Image (cartoon, rainbow, N blue to C red):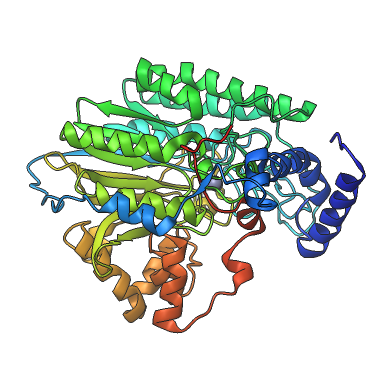
Length: 537
Ligand SMILES: [Zn+2]
Ligand SMILES: [Zn+2]
């Protein structure tokens, strides 16, 4: 990394010491070498911006940028909400939507490799182990990602055994490896795209970007301004991101159509109307709220103007009387998404809740859900989000995908079927084609009649009260291997913003979340949002 001066070197040394003390498993030097340039330049241009510095730091000029008030913004967004409830499914006819997420393809995966290693990602080097703990042919539970052959088997299995009308593909296509190159990211995503195209010909796939499609890992730059980023590595990062956007704008054009793929090429988000099934798919680029995206240090205010765009898109859908699905990678209700963003997003969900018939996310490799509480009436649930488990076995998960059964008339999901591969069993015989099983369907397993708001309000309460139900939920949460957070954290963590989650823990269970956990360093450094319609230069 090209450091500009002595203070940068000193600060970097301090960061390195701090990182090595607090995160012994993280490859600290590697991380700082990759992200140092972004961190320094973003801080310079955020805090030393003449408009910001003069008006807000040394206070000698009249402020030319206006701080945005979150509470006022939420009230402004929700105040014109029409009182239209979600419709009731007619169940006259249905269609099927497949969700595949967090594939994390690792073409360098090998069988009989070391499964416990000092790097972030294992199963890549031949093992000398004599204790029999080596990687399996089809994949390995633990710190290993998905072999290409297992991804191919997934596509072939779906093609032969699963009825699919269209596909939601919610990101994280590449392996968990901080050293992977930009070309690897592109090649992995191209490989997976071609698997879908080959094995599901004529089936439209709607992709969303994860935090592992980016180079370097986790960072996506929504500010296309070469003047701001001057160091050579930043110019390389910008070139790589542009290459990714143009490659997939073109590769996904058949699925998305010319206009939507053009929209994708700008900032990695788009909307596309599916004429046949009568639903608009809005695909977010959740790197705009991800709490490891260092580019947000520069300006966290509505990155890429995506929320402004979302508001306009939903208003247009309301005028056109469309039904909408929102798809994305990082679930906005999680601690991985900045609350300034997720609160405003949740307000938009409430404003347009009568149109939004489904929200589908990934990222946590876990099977869970989110409920959106009203800002106008705190007891009312206005919308739902589904969190599907991963295809990669990384984080100790059996490779999974999900099929939603959708009511044609209302576009509401009425049940889902969770497919799961028993990886330990599959590895016993590498010669047999892989068989995913339906591990459970929501209605059959949990005893509900639909996937509506009342169902999930009750489900969330039962997780607290009913130990048997909680145990089944926990088993499914980890794709057959358990490991859900404790009940109180599931109950409060299912709320659609992290602020609501922490308030719920305090008010319902008297659990205090420490300030150091509440806000990450990146969130504190990014600061509050500013109005972009100011007279700033
Ligand atoms: Zn992932
Ligand atoms: Zn992710």
